[in-house]
Amino acid sequence: MTLKGKVLVVDDEMHIRKFVTQMVLSLGEPTVLEAANGNEAVAIYERERPDLVLLDVNMPRVDGIETLRKLKLLDPDCVVVMLTSLVNRQTVEECLHLGAVAYLRKDNPPEDMTSRLRKIVDDWFEEKPAESGPP
Image 1 (cartoon, rainbow, N blue to C red):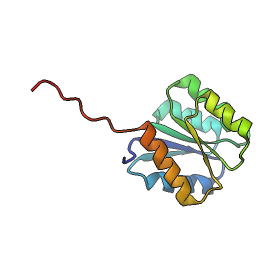
Image 2: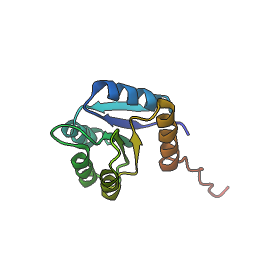
Image 3: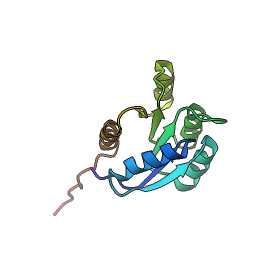
């Protein structure tokens, strides 16, 4: 499926945001929004209501877990994928328990990350066939 709509990429490191943005753009024609911290992410989400959020776990001030909580309070149906380079099973489980749909390891090869993100997008944004009405 081709990714369309709005995607919010949240990471405190600009080079990671740019890398993830390029990965997202390779999946289709989305509008990509970027935030450097949790507070920006919440403000942008409130204003723009993106279809997908890619959210870093480890950020200063407001971390990804707290940001995820705030996003879920704003919109319990928001689709959030956590980004992490640390594999801490407890953190991953907490994020999934709080409502993240998946997580991506930032330390995986780019092609693996892109493939995994494509699968997540396909699973969550599957195009529904048009309903056929009466002739």
